[in-house]
Length: 430
Image (cartoon, rainbow, N blue to C red; front, side, top):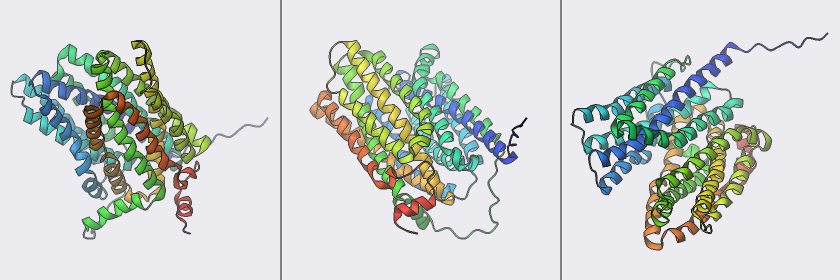
């Protein structure tokens, strides 16, 4: 009788798998906690400090401002630093920032300036943490496991975005908006604990380092994005898509809550369905990549799901019919976005040199997140000038335009195992 000999796992690979599970366990809880803060912070400003609409708008703007200003210097700074200690320190600082709100509120000293500082520093911490994390993951798992690893991280993000607002609303009603932030503070402490348990250590840095040329290092990060055809093409798609998401967010809440008068419950249900779709798409991404390759999985899925946006401007009838149509639309389109997110981050990690990952991720983030405030501003202007019904006709055009770049051969021809040699073929070099 033949006995199949089982292969023994290499100690290094087991250790890498354990390290990634610890990173994921900390990140998933932290993502849920962050959604509580994004919900509770403006509610605290309105209910406790009686902030005006302009003041709440400034609070939101201060949180997103670091998305434009921080990525490039953060990428250069992270390039010569071990990611693990940076993530631990950022988690501890974030916990202190968030927990300062209920403490000062309890002593009656909480003010808007305090919330503004937390929003600004919290946004900056989020940017640096995300860049460090994206650069650390390829060191914890092998190239053949990157898609699955990124899928698991994106699932945590999608689940947090789905369950977080509902949990935050329940906590706010139960203990008050500022006290709800205690849970986010604890989630950051948990994240710091799990990250501290990573056994991975970066290679020792040379004692003598060459003098830094910061402008040159920034240019190298940008060149890595713009001179890698697939990454450049996906960045164009992501920039247009992010602008479309912000436009949709603006028109959706006004159309459902104000114009149709369906209330926040219906609006929340639509968002939850979108979150469920994102989770399902993220989970399906690794299998789609293995079956169709990176390019066809991303371009094909988005080319199909983006068509659901054409339902929004034509749907009518009863409240149930409208809410159901909007919920199904967001579920389908978010599933496509979930697949695209996994493909995007995995390709960036595979097609660019590891030594440039921090600067590359920073440059990519600046390019693709820079359209977020523009999309929100455009959404507000269009709704004010033309109304929500007319603006809903613009939404599918924007998202369709975002998919068109993915038809380029630099993305379309990428199979299930892209590497630097394949990228050189696409560039026409040897």
